[in-house]
Image (cartoon, rainbow, N blue to C red):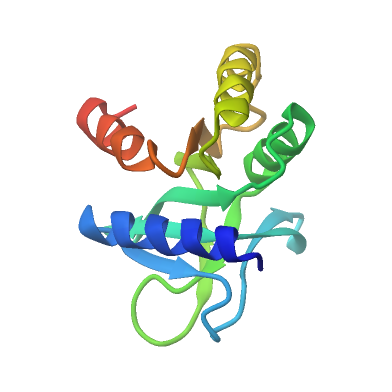
Length: 160
């Protein structure tokens, strides 16, 4: 993990905890947070995600830190999370368990820069044309490390 990626990850965790989320994250020595597509009694591993924010035992927020903020990379992350309908995560207690994904919001957090701001503006335009697959992902927000807390607060305020 690059130093910058680690800094962004730590900042996102602190912000989520400050907003009352229980946080589970990859790379804390407890294994990875893996998302799955369950179909016909099979669990197909799709990807690992960086952070999940949990309230009332429900995964409400998924955070992916993406240093490569091209439309292909970001929409690829969105599509994979949108396909998932379960997540192996630690909601409370000591063990990870399979938790259904339904209605979570994905935050794709990128490093702050002038060039990245232009890409994020483009991604927000593309967001309007993205067709969510099965309703497992309620929405996605592309933001940078500096605006993450404001975006999270807006989400909570407006219940988007």
